[in-house]
Length: 333
Image (cartoon, rainbow, N blue to C red; front, side):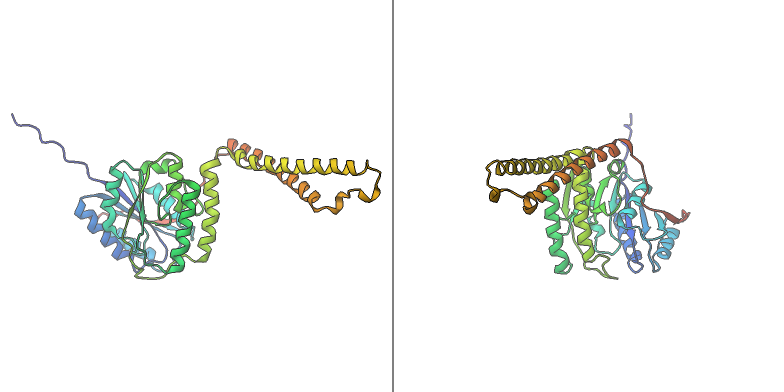
């Protein structure tokens, strides 16, 4: 009796999410490179290009790719909403088992894709790329290394390159991790806070071939502010009073203790019948510092209580983007 042939292993289902902003020169080449890797490995793939308010012919390029390749889907924003919004729109549209994010400037090498998937199959949920050898000027590399060290020290998620846009995820991660603002670089941190397993692999980094970098000094300032936001979200989003209340209690107690000590000293100086030794509180700077510490501490505790109230009562889902146009599904293979 002939034994039944075992079913073939299911093909990998992958969604490539690629935010684009003025990258018209690189899109054809990037699409060809991804297609080559997909074909060589037999992946079931879709490519989602999100045009984040480009002012060049990027959207026309995406439309052309979608007309020729049914695996390509294009989304065009009405204006520039930022990379986090672009990724969020791509994640909402993605249908694959795994999601791989890449930049559209050809600095990420699609040949690394099988290595990302291998790490996911090892049991990890988020795999971040690490540009171990970077082809960027020193004034971008040095601040980035300082920033990555600070992120690891504050959050406990110690990967080498949080800023790398080349990452791979299980689709389920984004059922719990939502992006807004500029939090895209902190997805591994946000995912780890939910209990997802995070890893990294060293990837090849190519020098920019077309155009110019979209990031400048302002990115560093925003990055540090976003780090403070992530530290709060991952540690205190469900208990904001623990952060503000603890600081508020310490400040209030310090100010109150100072005021009590000054008040006792003021009384004693008036009991010694020596007018020249009388303490005049309004002439002492510490008196005003104690008042300020007491008031600031009280305000922090009130703010913590209000934050707790907001956390408990307001949980709205707001999309951080607006889509103006989508590509039509192609009938050509």
